[in-house]
Length: 482
Image (cartoon, rainbow, N blue to C red; front, side):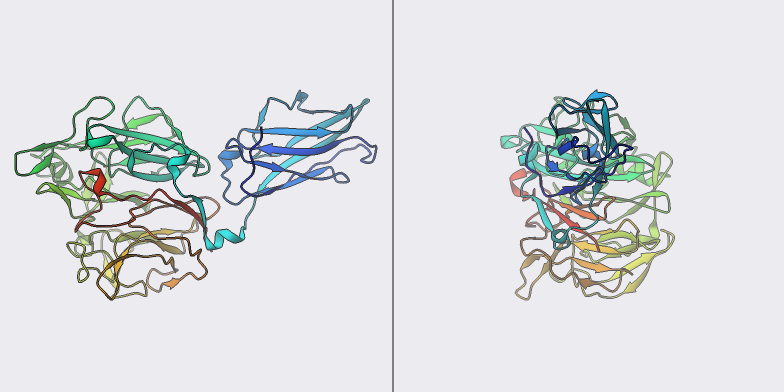
């Protein structure tokens, strides 16, 4: 049974040497995607075309295994490459030919599916899901991050049972951002605060800790207590990569606290590296990473205090960025430059939020290019660029209102130079910003906004060793970038 479509109209093209008015042929075509969405084609019998346009949010991977329901005139058979249509699936990223046969005569219809390049409500933003856990993500998930790789979404989740006694670290994939299927891996991938990045035609997931509950393989939490404080026992910077989304390679880096000539491995080895919520990104064909929150005095503290660049089997600190980095600052690339915007100097407080913008053309030397912007003092915002790399968009984040209360930013800002920002007008009023949302841009220049934290109650980070103290969002939105 075919499910109802999200929205649509499909498109197909064709030609035939037969007389198109001989009274037989295809009278209807319905296409069902791998995600269950169905669309009805519009047939032009004179041109032997069935023209269809699927929604702008459709990913090519969703069209790789489509089924067809075809109706035709009496005693007319329809085949594809000589085989019956019923029970088969077809990759509709490329045209296919449907042949209608009757009494020794044939007509060829070429079926072409076109992904729309416009959709009015996507300019304002459309909520794709109010809760992605309704589409296959487990209900016990408290932390997750999302990447877009090879035409699909990947979610890296951390789930916990009651009383924080057991933990589950899993990977899920989706073609539409709403229905998710687990990627079964022999290894455990990720951890709380692990973050993905696409680099060198591979999907990487980096960092994270497993400090709450016994994991699904029976491993104890990576934390120990001396009675008055807790510290991590983790001495490895986890990194997993995949080139196909299913087979994963362990590229983790072992720490060594005695290596005075390798600061990265030394910090990892003595447990003082910021594993939680690292910020990986690419620039000039290199892999960069800002450190996340570290464990100190029994709690997660600090964030984004160091900038690292991958150097063979370790990372080298870019010390030129150190004085410009702030906790929960927004780091992004735009017009062949690295930008750093906002953040908090020390703990997250009204007087600590920053307004400045810094940038670098080489990833080594940084400079302040603006003391303030229209965005104002903010931390925890996520900035992405369109696929052309010439326009940046800022989502979410936290600021303080005139009464001194923390408020989530519901505006979406836009900039072509990283300095002058403007509010995008006409955004769906139902959209609400979050702290550190996960935003990915697909090949159609659609920004997909997942999750983040609805509230921020601590002083340093929204993460906690008690999951009930975290307030994650599971909503998903899509915005057409313009």
